[in-house]
Image 1 (cartoon, rainbow, N blue to C red):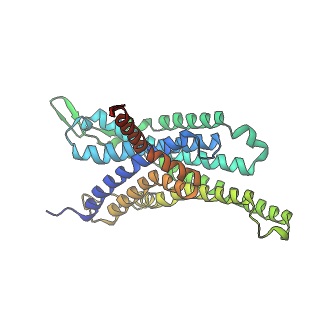
Image 2 (cartoon, rainbow, N blue to C red; image 1 turned 120 degrees about the vertical axis):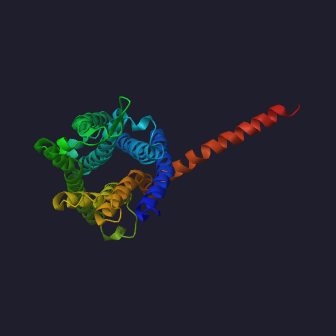
Image 3 (spheres, helix red, strand yellow; image 1 turned 90 degrees about the vertical axis):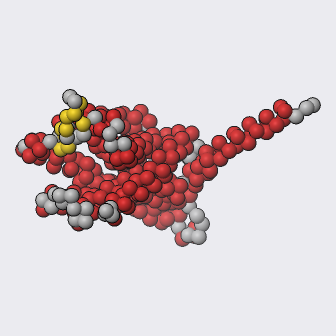
Amino acid sequence: MVRPIILQIRDIYYHILAAFGVPANVLTIVILCRGNCGLSKCISVYMVAMATADLLVMVVNILVYRIFSYHFAHSFLSYTAVCKFIMYLQCVTLYVSVWFTVSFTFDRFVAICCEMFKSKYCRVRTAAAVITTLSVLICSQSLPFWFAYESEKIIKNVRWGCRPRVEFFSSPAGAAYSWLESIFVAWFPFALILLFNCLTVRRILVASRARRGLRGHSSENQSDPEIENRRRSIILLFGVSGSVILLWLTSIVSFLTTRLTNIGQYRGDYAAPSYIATESGYMLMYLSSCANTCIYAATQTKFREELKTVMTLPWTFIAKTMQNQTKASCPN
């Protein structure tokens, strides 16, 4: 029997995504931690946090759940307790990834639009506090997922698998939590990202026009470093936050459509439009967790230089080691 085309695409896609996403995020963390990208320490903290969250998404949601749990269906990953923990971590990592992007966008908004508040907020200590607080709140907010799943079967007193608990999702409390959770991870953070981006870009454009007016017409053909920095800030800000919005959009629309129209029960029909839309949304959503590395490399010259340096470090080390061994083995 031929497998449905959407399942064939999904299997190949997740393997390729993991092969690229895991090393890409590891490289991003290493490069940013070296501190040679010309970024402020505050921005670097947020960017390292986002890269770490994206790496966790790649490991938990793609490697563990989408690949290992599928290919090793009867391993310890299928124990109900482990399965429920993986489902919990899936939600936590996705939420953390989104809200770290919101925190980064808000930090850039404060740095550019709130001069009086900038010196107090845009600091490494504040960034660390914001990241820690968000992590604790998200981990706490996702705790009800422990009660949203139950074991599929019991074999020799061992609980296997996990499936949605009908009593939880059909109860008023469970339905309310499900809707609040969708607002918390989808509409509210993306509305904040759009709002902060619009305000930030408006401020940058107004300040740039005023600066050009002060410089006068005689310097129109001369490059202005300040305006160039602002232009790169807009590109970086829109690249990071815009990619998240665009890549999550299909998943959000699919989620809302299935909830409102109640067509999410495709009953094993892998050719159903609802299933294809849902899986396509998931694939695009997870793609956002490895897009930031490409955005940094495309917009930041020093990041590209550091990327080349880090990627050549192992080969340089091997060459030096072989050279030293050759010198040691040669007679005087």
